[in-house]
Amino acid sequence: MSVVQLIRKQKPRIANRYFKGEIDGADFTAKVFDIKKNEDRWTLTASKVDDDLVKHQIQLVFPASFEKRIYKLEEHLDDIRLTYSTNSLLDPILRYGASGLIDLTTVDPANTHVAGALQHILTRDDGNPVSTITALFDLS
Image 1 (spheres, one colour):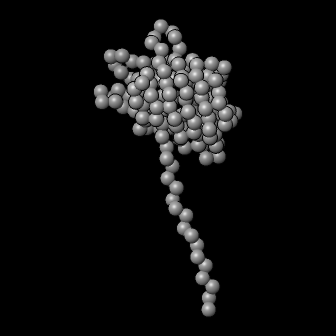
Image 2 (cartoon, helix red, strand yellow):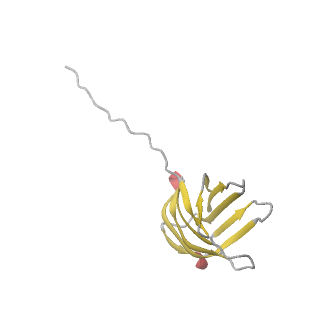
Image 3 (cartoon, one colour):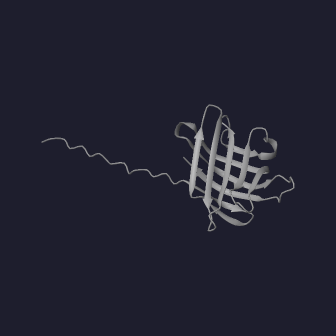
């Protein structure tokens, strides 16, 4: 009689990547994501195209040394860059985050994985309208 060894097959793991939120109360559910890490910086980019074929994009750049915790954007303006932009020919937008919370719940350089939230991000009051950005994200 031989010994039969049962090996459980591991189910394939599908990454559930998302970037969902609101900009000034309007839905921002990104369809295109990008995450990059080099020696000193993480760059997360999320974008969507609306019905008028205008691309809306949020980009978050922060130091690779950042760990899992909550960061006040206004206290780290030299380290963190958050931008919201569109490519509209009639009304292009480029706004920079000025205050709010960035909650990093997962920072995993080995797997290029970052998850967290943008909580009540306000853009700079630089003559342009101030926008409010709130989002949850999980990118890998």
